[in-house]
Every structure is written in structure tokens, then in C-alpha cells.
Image (cartoon, rainbow, N blue to C red; front, side, top):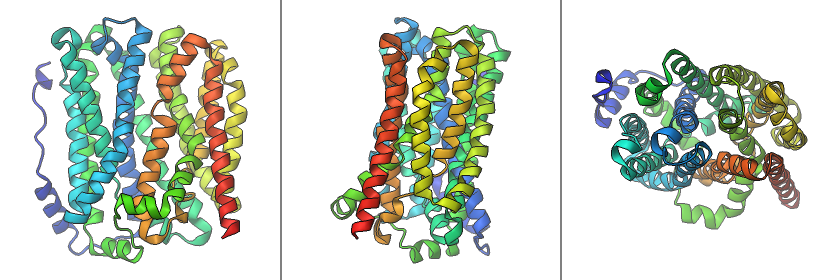
Length: 444
């Protein structure tokens, strides 16, 4: 533990912003750089996201809830897991006010430092046996900090890409930002698989898991500077001004574009419902009710992550041929069909569980690849920057925040059929939102 006793020192936000401006003084932003910035930024956020999610299954029940049975401890861990998604819209509202007053670079710096601080803070937390309820309270506070930071990390890069994409390539450019999800998941799962396989269980639960959170902190620092190199350039600022991608007051947005906000949140619900049901939930189910090797299952999920990345690329090609909304609707139908087989597969032993995960990752890639920005074009240009951020926040909150908790709790007590119900409800919401959106467009 001696190597873990001191947190890495953090450079100040002013220093990072100044260095980024000096580095980019004579630097223009090419579309390829924006795409790379989008992927790097999203991958770092999703890495944090999955590090916490995996730890909620493998570590936190034993470390923070040793007084409960394994199932109840996992459910409590999933309750705290949801706190970040509840806090995320609040973080967006606060960060938009910060950006209006002090600028985009300051907002982004504060958000990513809060994310890094909250993440590395979790690595230093004592367990329940050492600190009692205080350890659970601190974990909850730091998880809320992660959520606030994720809400503030919106930089508008995906919107810049979408608005500057050729008309026949918008599906492809929409997909690029989503690639950060499988990249972050693959790295997080690979790190946990290595630590879990290399250490005795007692060492892993005592200190081994903490290294994943230190790595997350280091990745955040790299991602911060990478994104600052883009957002402080004069050309990037011009792109944002031309696209009118500036924050608006949330009250004004809700009053003028509240309908589009709701349609956007529900239009991608099938993707967001599926998101945790093939990543975090299956790991908890295997941990509790299967004799599969945890390391082996993580490796399988890593392979699933590669399948999801490939499927996302394919989704870009499909969307450019048949349209993004039709692609999203088609995938919702496939998710609904898949939901009917979910209980049989999850209850079908090792083979069935593996098939569930792999097929689920392919569907996740195909649907989630077009889940961002498919209907945000409905927003008037003046509201698109804030509207896109809040639409994503609400989709996470409604579709994904409680998915592991609900799926595990209901399945454990009432049967796996509830996994089908959850997925089916998400698919139905997506199809309903897309239908309403199409009807409104036809009326207009």
C-alpha cells in the first residue's frame, strides 16, 4: 500500500489552459483532429464510467457492505452507481452557467478536474470495517462528484462534427463519438481482468482494485490537455460561433424546445436500456448465480467490446444509406426481438450466457452508434448546444441509471423475464418517440 499513499499532484486549470493556448497558437483544427478529440474525450469518460461499474460488482459489495448478503450488497452498490446519472443533468445546468461567464475552456477544465479528483478519491476510500457508515457516505459524495463532472464535460465536439459533416456522411460522423464507449469498456475490463487474475482475492479487495482508479486519473489528465488543444484554438471558436453552439439558459430551452428535449431523450432509450444489460448487469449475474470464471467472463466481454466497435462502424455505413432515424428504429425492433430470448439465454448455462452477451454487444454497437444526435437536429441552432447535452443526460437517467439495479433486483426475486420487460419497454419508447418525431415533421 505504500505506493498508493499519495495522490498524484494536479496541475492548475490556469496552467493547463495557458500551455494549451501556447501549443496551439499557430495551429488550425482539421476535421480529423476533431474526430480524434471526440474519441479520446469520450473514451476517457467511459473508462471512468466502466471502472466504477465493474468495481460496483467485484469490489464495493464486499468493501462497503460486508454486513449484507452478496446480493443485497450488490444492489446497494448499484443504488450508489445511479447517483452519477441523477447528478449529471444538474452538472450540465451548472456548467452551462460557468461557460457563459468564464468560457468553454474553464468549464471543461473544472469538469475534468472534478472527474479526476472524484475518481482518484475513490481509490483512497477506507472500507466499512475501518470507517463504518462514513465510508459509504464518502463513496456516495464522490459518485455524485463524478456525475456533476460528466455533466460539465460536454464540449460540443460531436455537434461540430455533425454540423460540418457532408449530407451523405452524417451517420458516419455521428458514430465517431460513440466509439469511445467500447474503447473505454475494453480498457477498463482488460485492466480489471489482469488485476483479478494476477492477485489473491484478499489483495485484490484490499488494494489491487485501487490501481484502476489511479489509471483513470492519469487518463483524465491526458484527455484534458488533448481536448483543451482543440477548444482553445481560434478556428474551433469560429466553428462554434458559426454553428451558434453556445450555451443557453435551461429555462429558456425548456420553454422553447421542451418537446424536442423529451423526444430526444426517449428516441435512444432502447440503446441506453441495452447498454448496462450487456455490460454491468451480466457481470453481476455471473458473480452471483454462475460458476463461470470472472476473469474468463471479463475476457469474453472484452471480445464483445470489439464486436460492438465493429458494429458501430457498420451502423455509420447503414445510417448513411437508409437514414439515421430509420436505422435507430430498426435496431429498436431488433432489441425488442432480442428481449424475448434474454431469459432463456441467461438461464441457459455458460453457452447461453455467452451468446446473450455477444449478441447483445453487436446490437448495442448497431443501435448506440446512432443514438447520439439522431433527433437533436430538431433543435433550433440557438438551442442545439445545450439541447444536445441535456438530451443525452436525460437518456442516461431514464434508460440506464437504474438498469443494473432494476434488472438484478427483479430477476433475483421474480425471475429473468423482467430483463425482457425492461428491454422491451426501452424499445417501445424509442419507436414511440421516433413516430411522434416523424408525425411532427410531417405536420410542420
